[in-house]
Length: 508
Image (cartoon, rainbow, N blue to C red; front, side, top):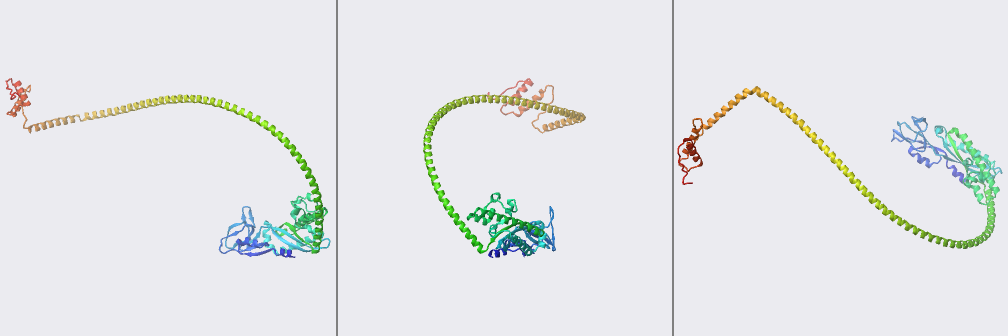
């Protein structure tokens, strides 16, 4: 009864939560919570959130509205932030996780009229396409009652088909065992069933009994009971899906968790198991003794054979070692000869390579010099050509410039000649005026000179010369003779044909 009480503690329910942010905590604390009705906080009047892991139904002014997505309208809103007016909110949150509903069945009569208890777990989930129908029409309490009733009826039908001993082999039977094996009922050997472990092949109880001294017949019976239970759980799953499909839920698995037998039956099974275990232990002890004796004899024979094989192997080893030593020495000698030959060849090849390298270097140097000479000559020729062309271009340009300059000078001369022709009379008059003016200026200057001597004009100018000489002599009278005085006396003597006394004074 304790197991049944613990199972009944997990019940299907729906309740109000603070807001969508509290959904994860609420569903984690209450495994039986299916539908939550979150409130909307007044601090966020223009947006709301849908948490991950839930089917969300949203209402506007109390009416459920669809979400308009890329694939068209849908009842369920995706997780994340959504904008909306203050009267739009998340009305229902339905969990996307699979829900395990424990349905303990009491007073199940077996074929031999023994009352047993069978704990069954039903695993189901809410289909996304029917979330709206489930949230609006299904009451979790009513769903729990209906599930319990359906499971009770199916388990009682199963009990009438098995015996008490077979019932103990139903533990841990689930519908997936039958689905993996490829059938829904019937017997078969463990080798024909693709199970992974003893728990999946025979159920937990069958595996324990197999390890506790069960005979092959008992193993076969336990397997048949297990397959009957698996067939029954598969049929139960089909029947439950048929019954609850209209409510929007899908039964994914049905599991027989435990089978509770009466105390008397359990003691009988324990006593029988203990007797079988003791018998099996005695048989195993006898078998162990026989095997130990046999193993000792085999070990002795193997040791003798091993010693002989070791001696023979050691002799063969020594012969092989000697042969290998001789071969190794020969190989070493051949290797040394080959190494010496390779060294000599390498020296010859190195010397040859050096000579070839020197020759190639000389040829390369000659080619480089020839190339440099050719490039230098080509560069000089190109420079001379460029210089010649430049000089010719300069001379041509200068000639053109001089020609243009001569043309412009000729034009200027023509223009000047034309201008002078037009003003020739004015220029002539102006020149005469300037000449007369200069003459008057000379006369004025002469008139202001006290040393000026005016002489009449004669044919040869001798009179003027004599007057000048006389003036010089008068000015220098009483003074020591000077060069000008001497010259004046000579002029007068030559011009006047009279004797002059040349007195140069004291014979100096």
